[in-house]
Length: 290
Length: 178
Image 1 (tube, chains in turn blue, purple):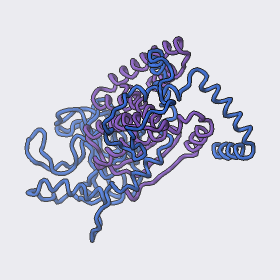
Image 2 (cartoon, rainbow over the protein chains, first blue to last red):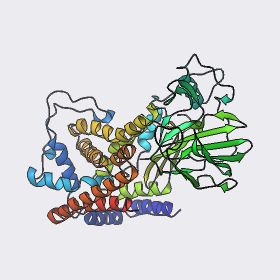
Image 3 (cartoon, chains in turn orange, purple):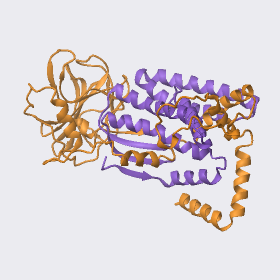
Image 4 (cartoon, rainbow over the protein chains, first blue to last red):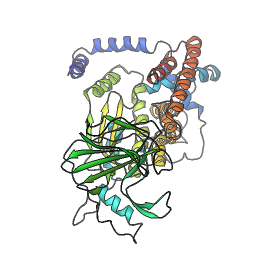
């Protein structure tokens, strides 16, 4: 609200009193750019790249089609003696970062409109993209049947959910070469590699139905989320909750570890609905902060 | 890609407007293509690794990208380094281009990419390091990088009267303080 107000105010000022706007602008620029002329520094940096007669390599952006043969305009020549400026340029290296990433709608929209991304061909029964990708990946194991207690589909969850750990996938749901038994076996959960001691969070609101130890799972927890939904967190180094306790979505319940039958620290995460195993990767979402 | 939500927060709009309003030297305008190329690099790799992008948000902290699915170590490493890589790929031809604006955006892109490769969180270099090393190592590395940057910033301050590098080093140190 406040920012919208300032925005409108600024626009009004700019249109109604252009003179005043200009003087504010000049004042601010004087304050901001008191020490150096950034334009000249940046132009100097680009002049460090030697001109070549041969055509420049292919360019990412269409707007940058170079004209290598064009004569150099006088304004593009270095402004300062090279030695002093190359030093001062280094002083400004981080400055360009300050407002970075604030104006990316352009790139986003161009990526969406250029059509490079996954236009799925029309199918009689369109499966969600995630499901189709998973089924395609399982085609690498044509000799193995889908186990009876497993569904490859992606039912909508009747509750809010959160990623159980920050890490990367080291072994996915489905058929895979077992790392210890060294044969193709069905993997009923997803392995998320993370460093020992990283926090594990509850996938959704629920009640802890088991917190204990088994030889294969190590320290592990199961949580009931209602309506027959259950999640399981295995190989923990420490358990922070006990059986019967209620937990909140995203609340810390344990720490990543390497207990039980493992080759290294990771979280083995399972999701079941009335005993049927569902691919948990469908529901794990992360945010990339650019 | 059809179901992607696009949000632009009011704060981001304000910063955008303010930068546009006060920028007379054209640096903000040259930052636009540089930042766009950088982020397009990240997004392209995430999409190639079949991450399902659900939502793109532009807020005061930059671009936030919500994606579904779990990615492997190599994919995340590539995604982290794709931004600076795209930036560098753009920078060198752009700096040889004829137009002054494009040359400037090339230089901005070069600096942006180099800065982002520093091994300190939350920069891309630090993010890549976090996939390879323990959290404590990454934190130490981030703090050392921040201190080195501040030292260089102090030198820049006394030599050229410039505060920028010191400020960036300070920001990195504060970010990695807790």
